[in-house]
Length: 53
Image (cartoon, rainbow, N blue to C red; front, side, top):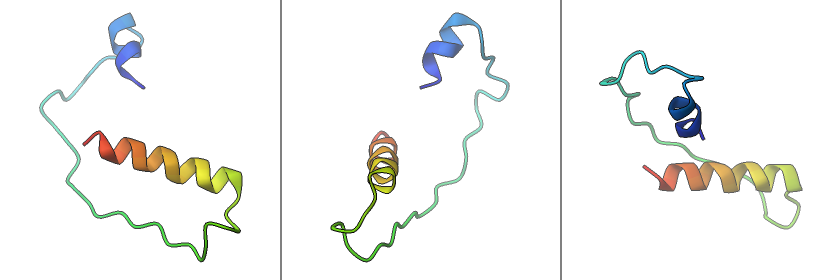
């Protein structure tokens, strides 16, 4: 997401050696059947981003 902006010079990395601490993240919902498209898209994106780590 941001890599292209760094390459284009639109963003500048200010703390190259610093990272956020690891956290546990849980998504709790009653059922996938009643899940809105927006909620499903959010969960899909969060899952994809988490898989990259």
